[in-house]
Image (cartoon, rainbow, N blue to C red; front, side, top):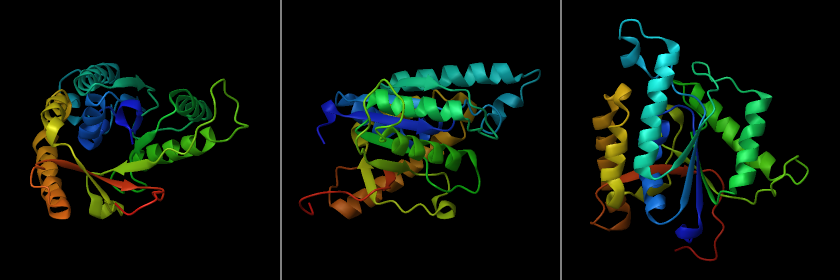
Length: 241
């Protein structure tokens, strides 16, 4: 792919998912001149904001406000646009209106690459719900008869980013993305997410482990950090390189 002509669309269930799971990819493609747009379905206000809820007098609106600011700051660090849907959290509630808005986003943005959650996650049902919404939006946006002012979508590849406990989610990575040149940006973006500080070191260590695996699978000893992805659709190619 010619990354300076690519558009990367990331569908994130909660305010911080795109940072932990795809921050390296976002920063990498943004640094290459690619447009990156994040669709944040909820703020993670109920299930992923425990630190905030421990503060006396905390309210739902205040949690949302704080998480939005964190996500906006992280997106700016990574070089991404971001849109919030406030579709609820624990549970994330799909509606016909939300589905249509996602389809229209796919139509307007015309992504060449899509990043989304894995199909399964027994620890967080919002994540597979977000995955289902993203996958459906991609398919429906391809339909010439779907009502929209924007042209129908082509067939962008979809890559599922790594869930928190991949062994519990049936996640089998077949892509290891070298994020070494932009890891410092990912780390800076993670540190914007103060409500989930406990994940800063966890995700940094994970990037190191995936980097070690990337070296093993490529022979490129310059790789220090990587992110893991699972491709949804077959790669179409004229060679095996």
